[in-house]
Length: 108
Length: 121
Image (cartoon, rainbow over all chains, first blue to last red; front, top):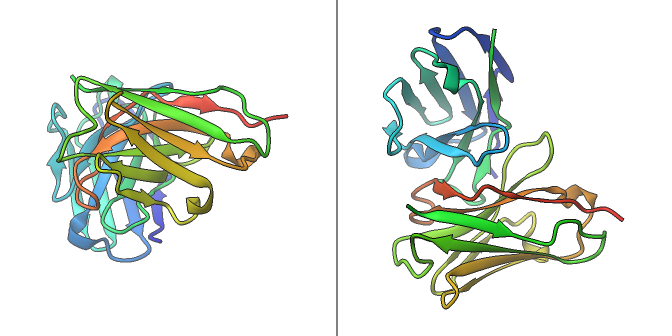
């Protein structure tokens, strides 16, 4: 199965700063079938970005995804207070579908 | 607006069977364009895909759990369900149901809130 490694484990930033989150796969993810989710305590994950940097419905354009092959990045251009959360990547191109361990974006 | 709601037993004893149901509202499990899945997250851990099902009954399982898992769909009740046998403490997790469009082509776009299942004697 494809193992996804996210880094860093925790990112401490201030509102207005740029966040760059990494997701590295143990093997090539076909057709860039990688998704990013945001999860807040007590809430279900929310789909943010998937595929060739497609934003899910209602997701603001400060969220963007990039990458291909084994290296993918989620960028939040300017952190808003509501963006402090845990972010997980998921590959859905090869069964079994797998998730990364998550990156926590916390207020500095 | 599509909504998914998990329902389950709460605490489960080791070696017993865990059963969960996901009730779908605002949409139909009989959709020809969507699949329905279960994902779990242990305390402090990452997400793990368990299984998915199509309205016709075609199933897909994570090999790591396949020997203990059954996913099923009841189109008359607009529900799908998960059973996990021979549970241990390692199965303690928040279990979430979710929808995805396409098997291996699209991610999970709608999720339920999740149900905490604790395995303890």
